[in-house]
Image (cartoon, rainbow, N blue to C red):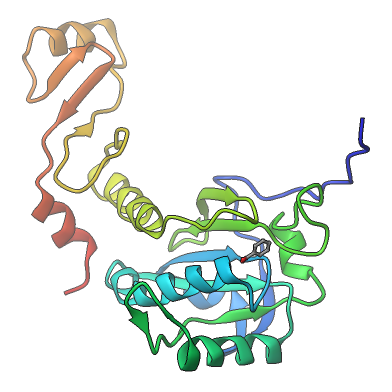
Amino acid sequence: MEEQKEITPMPRIGDKAPEFKAVTTQGDLHFPNDYKGEWVILFSHPADFTPVCTSEFMTFASMADKFEEANCKLVGLSIDGLYSHIAWLRSIKEKIEYKGMKNVEVKFPLIEDITMNVANKYGMVQPNEAATQAVRAVFFIDPQGIIRSIIYYPLSLGRNFDELYRVIIALQAADEFGVATPADWRPGDDVIIGPAGSCGTAENRMAGNEDMDCKEWYFCTRKLDKDEVLDKILKK
Ligand code: BEZ
């Protein structure tokens, strides 16, 4: 069997986002302190000047206003230097036209991490996939600096940015309304009520005495209006 390389630990859901200072394409960054009171997505990509990453950056940058409206900032990272980042972002803006996107300016910060300091802190290097490139990691961090969700993709697989947006909205909806969100949930779909904590509550729910729809005592949903969700979450 092929020998497995040593793995660095990674932060987990519920942990405080590890702190770091870094240089970015938008100036110096003190993370996560610079984002107090805001949601932030910290994501890594394997390398500048590569096609999957280019398609991802064009897509993410084109959606940046949508994320901003949801009080969510974007921060990218790869194990490349600042001048490589600058040259790549300039090339994207000036030369690449893809799926109707063109003249795309990446305005969010892209961290230079040639030392791998940040990538190692966040477990973005998964050495059995690639020893010197970050995988496609996505950390969703809340306004208190707590990691709320993590998604990882391998080098060959471009991310689904609609899903990243869905996650940000669903996390905020869960906080705002004290509910959970079922499979494939989108604003306007029914939400899940917390589990019945006693036999009496379970009985009550199944008797139809509460304003909810129970498939079984442990699986109850309620309506949550799309506009109510979006009014709460999206900046006007
Ligand atoms: C890409 O972004 O195209 C890519 C980067 C690293 C490995 C494979 C693909």
